[in-house]
Structures are given as C-alpha cells and as structure tokens.
Length: 249
Image (cartoon, rainbow, N blue to C red):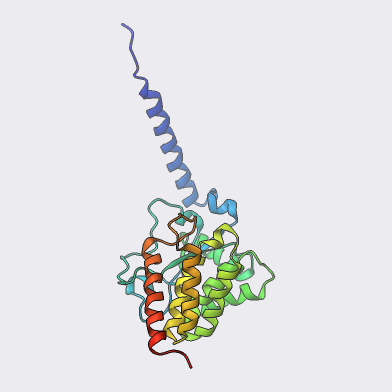
C-alpha cells in the first residue's frame, strides 16, 4: 500500500532544518568560533551604547543600565532587552540605543572587552568620558551625529548649554538613515531643556519647528508617535500662555 505524505510535511521539515541551523549558528557565535553577520554589521555598526539623561527624572531601572555597551549580535537577539526592570518614568522612557562604527582606539578596545565579556559591558563615568574624548580627538566623521547625541545626554545636568548646542547640531545635520532616528528625541530633549532653563521663546520656536516638520498625520520613517506629537502640542500651548502672561523683556 502506497504511503501518502501530506504536502505540508516538506515545508515543516525545511522549517525545522532552518531552526536547527540558526541554533547551531547561535552556539558557534557565543563560543567565539564565528562572528555574527547582521544588518548592523552590513551598515558598519560595531557596538551600541544604551544611555539616558542623568537627571532627577531618570528612574532606577534606566539608571541601572545607563552607559551600558552591547555588541550588535546581542542587540539583534529576539530575547534582547536592555532594561532588567520596566521603566517607571511617568512621562515615558527617555533611553536611547546609540550605534557606533567605533573606529578610534578607545572604541576598538571596548569592542575587544565586549567580545571577552559576553557582549555586554557597563562603563563607568570615567570610561565613558575617555570613550567620547577619543572620538572627538579622532578624524572619523561617520559617528559624528551619534557622538553628538551621547555628548548632549551626558551634558544635560552638568552643562546644559553644551547639551542644547549638541541637540541643535543633531537636528540640523542628521542625514543618514541611522542618524535620522535621533532627530525626534533631539527635538523633545531640546525643547524640554530650553523650557526648563527659562528660555521659553526658544523652546516655543523649537516646538513650532517640530510641529511643522511632523505635525501632519502622514507617517514618517523616523517620525514621532502620537504621544510625542501631543506632548509637543501641549508644550506649545503652555509656552504661549506663559509668554502672554509674562513676556520676555
């Protein structure tokens, strides 16, 4: 009697084979025998830094993983999550994952350290300063926007004028696809900083510029969420009311 094999069986076997190969590849990567190749390798991203503004609004979960570096293959894992606990910031999580080509000496040393430590390393304040100082001293331009984002986030509490200048730089100069992802966060942080330090007319100008760029209902590749768009609309209303009540001298 002939045995009839359902048409779906070859597809199931092929899927199981692919899953087996993926697991084998994952084991080889973790063992260090081969190097993972993913979308970030093709774009030249060699490491990621997870950062959050260092101010009183940062929750414990975000502070815990601030200035943590990751290898791209770790970030690409389906199980990856930078936070060990949920963010509790009532205004929403402000953390950013910043990719770097990392071709200067300090970044290359960090990549070696990451490979020896399972692809995750938490940097001290001193180590983070050395990494950024090395980037600024190098001649590479591929990480210019990413470095500006990292500088701005770190400077918010200690040197807000520097943070404001760096956020403006990101908004004005981001062009590459990976850099455009930081424009909306830069708008949000810049307008909040300006309002926080009493520069209300400048904050209003930034918020207006944001709404002109993203205020329509069209979907932008790196556009804001509805919550972020609403946040800026509310900021405009609040600033207009404040400026009408107490105009700048």
